[in-house]
Image (cartoon, rainbow, N blue to C red):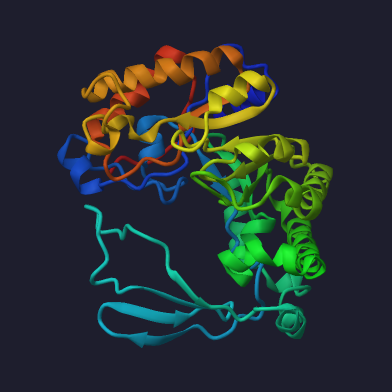
Length: 401
């Protein structure tokens, strides 16, 4: 089976003991990895369909391949983006949605070994939409204009490449209802507004849903989507930013209607992404039309507990990403060893062995591969997965150098 075929078999519970190995992303120290033995011709995973061998190819791991015709689900036309202040340490700027943010100047940001910035998200200073009056005054920017919300030429190019590949899960990225509110009105207001002005929030979510449907209806025929990917990121370590009662009252209908729509146009599965601890809402998400959840962060939620309680729930993730650093002070008491290879063995035995037996599971870290991972350890992890039934197949051709 190809990786896509194995994904479908896994979703149907018909994969037997065959396991699909998946990586959500690579935010790793490339220079260090090259010095540790990674072949010089291997390129980053930024373009999964690059003409050169990338990290997914090299380690034989699958992942999500998102449609990318420059889709705009938010403000159209955009406001002018502008730099408002730069004191050499921090910059303040306004983005295309008219919102103002402050973040560290690039020159003082903490850098990974590959030169990329790591650290906290921007600080939310101000939002163009603060209340229902602001929203209705600007509503024409958030509804309609469907044909102008994606780039036709980018669509044609990306669709042609995505249709013919079988190594990655082809997906359509959309912001879920809470994620949409967070981008539109800010993290805190997205939590408060459903209580303070329920009808206004419902109007915004209805507009967002219809915009998503309108765009998807236009572009889906050009692709062969395996799933829609709903990004939420609405949970902290202690729980969701949405209460179970509020979920049923304000948010559940959005997922149900989105699922019914995507299924009607031939997109079989809906994947939900949220970090942290989703425990209070797990059952409600699945019952509202979500088919798969990821990444099941170990520090926030016990995936194995839910897997046992709900044996047909489809899951991606749950392998502790910090198993690669068992000797780090932050991991004291977590592992019975400080040897990284023994820690990997213990974690795969803890998670992958029972989940493979249970089924409906795609093996993956509980987030992406991160800066603290050493190349030999990650290579060992990927090779060790074959002992647990890994059956990934790289079918695409690429250059080596």
